[in-house]
Length: 310
Image (cartoon, rainbow, N blue to C red; front, side, top):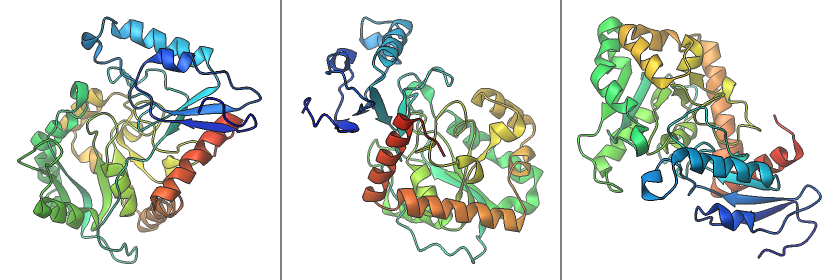
């Protein structure tokens, strides 16, 4: 419906197929009212499938963004239209929570987790090689155990030896995944099919502190609802701690100094407890159910439209 109530502050549109001309043709909104468009189909990476070059595609999107300030976007990655550059201009709008949830045992913050840091997932390459860091960890995770043998049993980074698109996780795989996730202080979050990954939502559900490489701050993947959630106090970004903004440079450094991964993680018991409480609060307020996520998305969009942030 392109003639909604004139005083509507947000007009939701779904689902956008990727043609910017569709958006240019929308009737202009006035008095601060915005369209909120689900825009997961934008992509300038696959320009070989079209007549446009990546540069032309990016110019077209930037032109659209600046000419239509009455359009906000919802996406799992506001930079998802171009995976080739973590500093590409973001679409204005809201990062949605990855559409999955934790289904493991209840969380008990009074119980000391068995593991310090865990990850379990596939060795998928991802779009445009987005998840190549998974192979790096497959080849190099032994370095942490070798450097810090006393922690060998508390660090579990595991990869599935099989992957069929859409059906890669067996019941046994899922059981092991939840065993690790429900018993860890920190959850390593590696990129998936694009920059974003389902595992973030599941880690939040388990009240495990997300550990990201170079995402979650000023470049790369902006975390969900980040204009109303201050993720700095509920996650760890290794690049920020170690002075790197590019994933390839960070991993090159960690290959020479694997112990720095663990040195970057807070080890004070009270600080860890406080961070996990914050993760739990984020889960309860914004991630717990589909309704919580929908309300969070609308709240985030409204705050963006009004120029308000956390």
